[in-house]
Length: 419
Ligand SMILES: *Cc1c(COP(=O)(O)O)cnc(C)c1O
Image 1 (cartoon, rainbow, N blue to C red):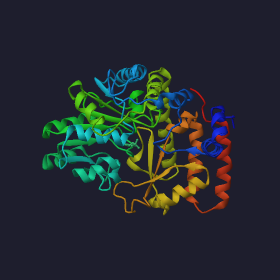
Image 2 (cartoon, helix red, strand yellow):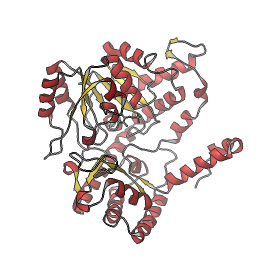
Image 3 (cartoon, rainbow, N blue to C red):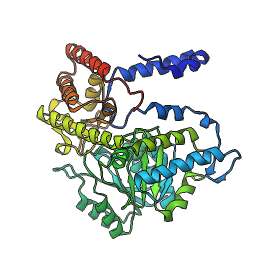
Image 4 (cartoon, helix red, strand yellow):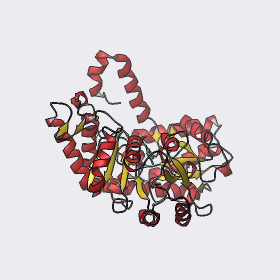
């Protein structure tokens, strides 16, 4: 392990926390992360993130703050917004949301009233908590109509979405997902929204990096508002952002602050700036192409090994595996894989017969391992290991053998310190 030099002052002040962070470094370095929403940030992003910008209160927006001493952070936020505008071709950008969920909360607040009808994707078909789940504010504040995928093709059924929209006349349609392995047709959503007089919000939390890198079509020309996160495929710090038209800019801004947040996290905004800067480089396009190529190989290998892949494959960074024929649940798969050093998460599949806590599927994603330099050949080896574990989840021998190959793969693909 490297000395992790940035921890030296911390280890003097707080050895307990320094030790925990070192342990987390060790854990990340020695396991293979297939959690589709995770990634590894560059050292440059970590440096910005750990800077003294965290000290500054900056409620408001550049040039209109409620505190003095904001001249530098004004520049930080302006630069961040300017880079995001270029990256996504957006007219207006807000980089203050603390997370993707906060971005969605603010967007709902800007566009609709409590009690309004929203239409979002069913969670077991790939939708997110904030798209109308009963346990979430979105399900409590709004009347929710959910759409999903076709039972046969497992693709979004746009005709069914249109029929539901005509029937329920939602004020807002939400497109975007957390576990949908295919391209989403934003033009189709936009036509449906226009037809029924609904606004269209597209949540690109998962695929923001693919859109930035040109490996997934952009919703910006079609959506009223686009929300996203920087921590997933975009490979930045944990945080949210909102893209919208100039016309909606001031409602979005006031829904973020003062509507739903106080002071912005200026150190995180600075780290978002670095993230956008890195995503603007040609190397980032190649990175996102490699993410998608790796996911394709993974889907092919899993299918080739006789497992059923939801929708028959993938167009993006993730693959959803139906564990039904293996007679194990997602929870069992997740536990068995973790014991072997491979991290992936249980996930409901469309029309799942398992309860969500067990789940009938497993979601695997390639953003983090692609950052670590995994090639299609590595993916073939890795998928073979995954299949062994899934077929014999209770075998200690399989666990130990897989674990030792995982350890070798981790050594040959160290966590990147810079890229
Ligand atoms: C991850 C995700 C979010 C929320 O992101 P947080 O930063 O965890 O709040 C929102 N929408 C979708 C579709 C997501 O996948």
